[in-house]
Length: 110
Image (cartoon, rainbow, N blue to C red):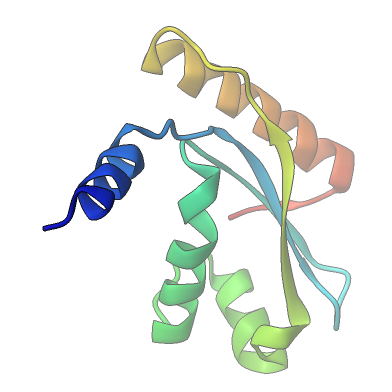
């Protein structure tokens, strides 16, 4: 293994996950979903994977994907949270902000 590759792997492992709130919108309908995650960088891939498999737990989101197709859904970050000292504080803050954005956007839970 070259030193460049080792350095790249080490840098990947050391990067910090950014927690936050995201919103998924359907262009073909007025539906909107808001979710929270401890890692904004990875959540879209996870959601899109389960939608492609037809196994997402949010039935309304899965239905929109199946009915209108993947191109009708958009994913965007809604809010990034500052780094918290503990996972407990981060999780509580995520829940609080997700509730705020669901009310603000009239959205469903992802």
